[in-house]
Image 1: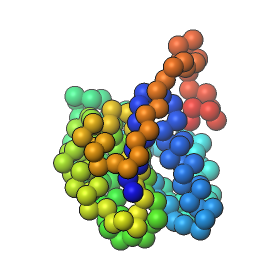
Image 2: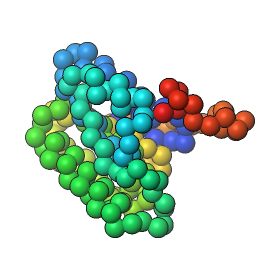
Image 3: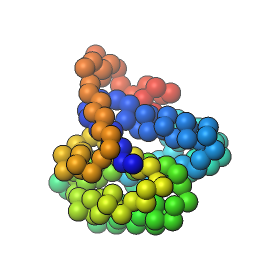
Image 4: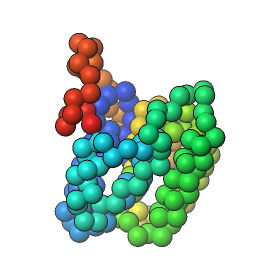
Length: 169
């Protein structure tokens, strides 16, 4: 099955990780491929590295990607990550595959939408596939079995409170 977690609210990656932990609890293997993230400063990544059978690979630079001003290196690393994900999905090695921030990567032009649609169409039925990130193209909804839109109603950023360690990263 195909799941999408999108919207402008906080918690899409966290929800996908929670699903992964549930799968681990039942003895399954989980893979999370992160696009546009290239640092292990995130608390969840530090924790996941300690959990057997929950593999995390990052395909991003340590800098933020600027929409409309893509660097060749950013496109190349996203392509490498996408090809890695395709290979792992095809292998059926993992019960659950999370493509974290892939929706943003598509929106920014790092990964072509048509390639993601083909990936979904060719996803083996034995693999649960989760796509996360804001700006999910509506075209992908037609291919998903579950779409959750997480919307921000209120956030500490609005009060000038930014990135709290252990909470926001």
